[in-house]
Image 1 (tube, rainbow, N blue to C red):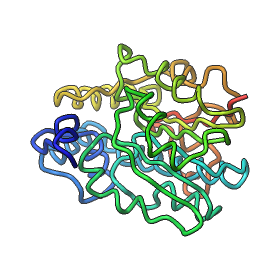
Image 2: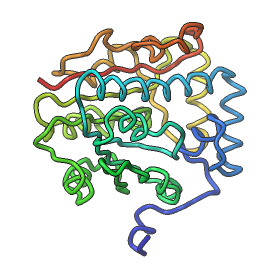
Image 3: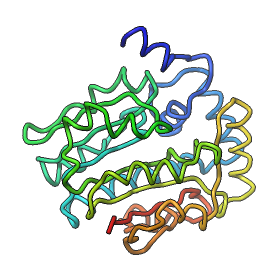
Length: 270
């Protein structure tokens, strides 16, 4: 990491970071006391928060598997990657199609420090890691990592999992997603999840309050506002739903709606 990189993406373990809070709640080890304290406070407000986060993680795996197996997608741009957690996106995609190519994008230096786990590609495929901020989509699309790894003349899946809820409306999250999809050709896909209070209003309002107390935004969006991220795209059935209802596997059979606070969907660019 260069001196300029350290200035742009400072490492501060004294305050909680969403990626490390997420890691702690998933049972990971790449987190610090500030992250652990924040996660425990959130879990005390809503004990089902880890369940919701695991269901979000499972959605990522199912959506990637669907895109690779059923839609023939071989290129993935994963923004807001977070700390490596098995299975990682490339492991799912390359397990189906070894030639798949993946670019991971995150702005947390801790994620970069553990990015080697994301670069363990099959010989037939390729993975790369880009340190960049979602709020600057052009820096992502125009990056050497994206241009060298992906062929943007071919269908590509944009994966934006559990990240847009950290953007406030003044950041123009809908515009950011549109700008990321614009250079992708027809036949590309958007897979996206975002937090909601629809299924657990009191609990998720309390969780958002704990985020805010630590200087982190958690913007909870209704079904209508979540669906708006897919405007102009052709939604894959069953549309935008609580994540455990999207092409559910056996692991989703006993999950209650009241324990999941994430909407998710997959849509095709026409």
